[in-house]
Image 1 (tube, rainbow, N blue to C red):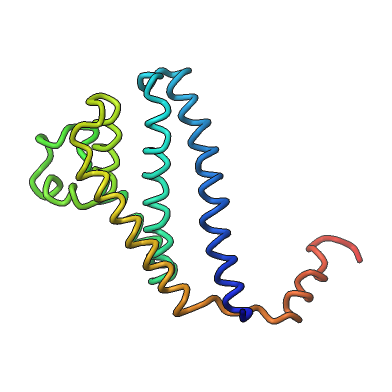
Image 2: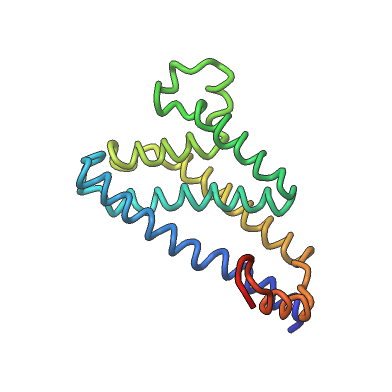
Length: 179
């Protein structure tokens, strides 16, 4: 195995493993706070809402990572525009889908925020009825973003850092420190 393959595999493992664990731990504490302390949703639905909220966060994270890998720093801007500026108003979570203007009502079903909202809302209040399209859309976004990340990682591995630069960085004296 070459150095580039080791770097790409370790980067993928670093991104997927600890990120999911950290997201799960963070989501766990927030869900406990909102569920039990603030009574934001029925407490008997905790074990089904937690994986749904984690799925929503992971989908958006993978889409952002894929766009950043594909477009560079502009990928962050594209993610913010698509997910927040277009996704949140078109989700219909605050006002309801029937009250949205036609543009927002038409693009909403194709973006993760509305599908995450529908999946969570229908799971909590309607025992999961009508969640098939929302779950499918989120999983398609996740699958495409993960496949794109894998392809881009295999085609364009990260540049290897020269050993002497690594050693120089390790030996550098922090600013303000006296040698």
